Amino acid sequence: MASDVERPTISFPAKNVKYSGEIDAAHEPLLENKSSECEEFSVVSAILPFLFPAFGGLLYGYDIGATSSATLLIQSATLSGVSWYNLSSVEVGLITSGSLYGALIGSILAYTVADFLGRRRELGLSSVMYLVGATVTAFAPTFVVLVIGRVVYGIGIGLAMHAAPMYIAETAPSQIRGQLISLKEFFIVLGMLVGYIGGSILVDTVGGWRYMYGLSTPISLVMGFGMYWLPSSPRWILLRAIQGKDDAQSLRENAIDCLCRLRGEAIIADSAPQKVDEMLSELSHMREEQEASLAEMFQGKCLKALIIGGGLVLFQQITGQPSVLYYAATIFQSAGFSAASDATKVSILLGLLKLIMTGVAVLVVDRLGRRPLLLGGVSGIAVSLFLLGSYYTYLGDIPAVAVVALLVYVGCYQLSFGPIGWLMISEIFPLRLRGRGLSIAVLINFSANALVTFAFSPLKELLGAGILFFIFGGIAILSLIFIFFIIPETKGLTLEEIEAKLL
Image (cartoon, rainbow, N blue to C red; front, top):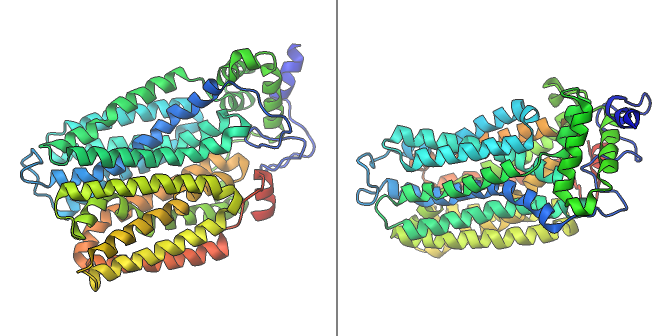
């Protein structure tokens, strides 16, 4: 019996090994869904491993929504509650983009420590960063301490946005895995809506920005306790086994125990050992004991995947998305909603629209495909940006133009760049390099996000809002050309078929 257990753990096939990560049809990796048999699972046992990691996305979205209103209050002489309210455009940019700079740090950390910590502990560390960052921000006595708190919170964002999709993918039953991964974007949007609503309620409160940022602390505590309670990913445990990181037999037993907890012990207890041994055999066949090097990330198939995924998430940000989200209330004020409370209440409409359109995208993406949604949605984004530019340049006496343009932008973004950007980067990288490839893509995403967020206010003062939105519109046209000629259609393809046919 012992030898049967050890064989898939320590021995590797000498034939038909494809070191790029490709595998034979008879050997399916855990993340594939080609099995003719549906996995048995308890609904409660399967949903909870999605819920707590998704709180990481919820806290990310909440930060976007809350910051939209918090920056208005911090700059108010009567409502800020501080003596340093007279901030320059650069200082406002530091507040809004501070969490994004932290996310950059988190993304870099994820590249180096994710495989060592594991998905569960990385998410636990993320919850600690969320908690510390929110607490420091809420009680900040000075501007410098406020920015430090924002950066610490951002580290939590970077870690969470890297680890959450991997943990969900590796622990969810195959028949509901796609839905759960797509719903992570829904949680991000839900967090934005909660942030907008919280800002609307507190926008007339002295020092209300402190409460806005402080409200994320209880959610981070729930996330942290939840990740402490949840089991580790069985796939990550088995990777450690075949890479010789610990005693193979004890790791195998640990993986069996974790799989039982994830599916419901009463349902899967008898079949769990067999399933774990199948995972070991699949991982051994793919030669997963060979860790990917940095040089491999910029060669061959992975380089092409980086161009596709990295280019997509880059255009996702430099078409102005961070500016629309972080400065939504300010834009509505400029469009004629003079009171801060009016602007933040209208921002709630943006959050509701994002939530609805995200739900639509989740429902149709596997039926219509990625390219049609990207091409149609980004076309709408370009039109809306040119409308915003026209409003600030020629149509200043018609504030409805700005409101309609913003609504069109948000709706089209959630049909295209919003969910599909994250979906594509999770599909396009070769299997063995996917974890580190995703880290680089997330780094590109947050780098561009931080740059656009920080630069928006100074550029708005230098060029004017009209010229700035025209520039974003021109970039949107370039992104359409990139999508048309570079982005492949992955609908209906397995990960092996994507790698074989498209890379």
